[in-house]
Length: 307
Ligand SMILES: Nc1ncnc2c1ncn2[C@@H]1O[C@H](COP(=O)(O)OP(=O)(O)OP(=O)(O)O)[C@@H](O)[C@H]1O
Image 1 (cartoon, protein in one colour):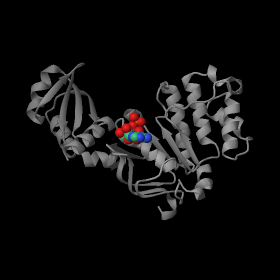
Image 2 (image 1 turned 60 degrees about the vertical axis):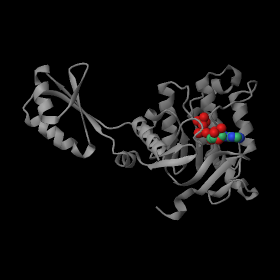
Image 3 (image 1 turned 135 degrees about the horizontal axis):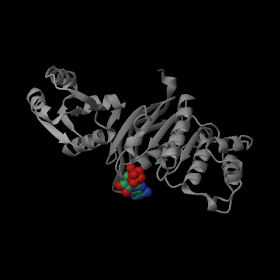
Image 4 (image 1 turned 120 degrees about the vertical axis):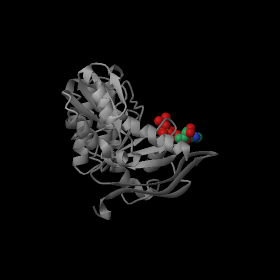
């Protein structure tokens, strides 16, 4: 990884609205070819940070570079053409067709309209749908059009704010397929979401925000190591074996379906499994459940509150 891979560089960034501090002293570096998820409660500062990166607002303190330029400066006009943004509540003129909307945004970005049909098809809006007025679109179709708008001009930086809210699982999957395609093509993707479980497997890195501050950052495995949350070992065994298991591995919790759960530190899991198998009890199944992104998120918020 070289310095030229850096697409977004944020240092000591603070944004105040009067007495309200929306973003507090945030440092963040994003690189080409990575998908980063920013998670946080309502009011954590995610949208404020994206607005700063888009150049829609200016920092109160700190510095910010997007593709090498200050995004709010006049000099960043060219940079803005290489940035795509899908806002949380995307809205288009209901009387315009999907195709007309996309052509309109292409003109705003100073782009040719030639590739727009292909782009609409890529996001799943077939020609018949693209000819319909947006007012007749379902939520999923509006969101697909929003994504097509964000992808105009093959942006090097893509901001997606709550992109999958209200989409069914199949649409969400299709959405993430496109995100992965862009990331693999070298774009930086920053996506904000409350839907933590669906981010597992999608994001290379997670940034946890709380009350305007960045409280944790890293890949899921890094966050797991930092959080040091226990793992759950779930065993399916006959009921008469419970006593032997409890003696070998400590306290256990009974779950439905003949399953018992043992909780231990991640570093101890191999040892616990060894002790369990040494008891000689007949195991029908074994499952090791790592802490979810939801668990880690809750942990970092608790830690931040305690500090
Ligand atoms: N224009 C503004 N004027 C005053 N306060 C603002 C403004 N924009 C945001 N804030 C405040 O800054 C804080 C951070 O808000 P922000 O919208 O960035 O959070 P968020 O993490 O995006 O939340 P959500 O998930 O609800 O979109 C909140 O307390 C909010 O009320």
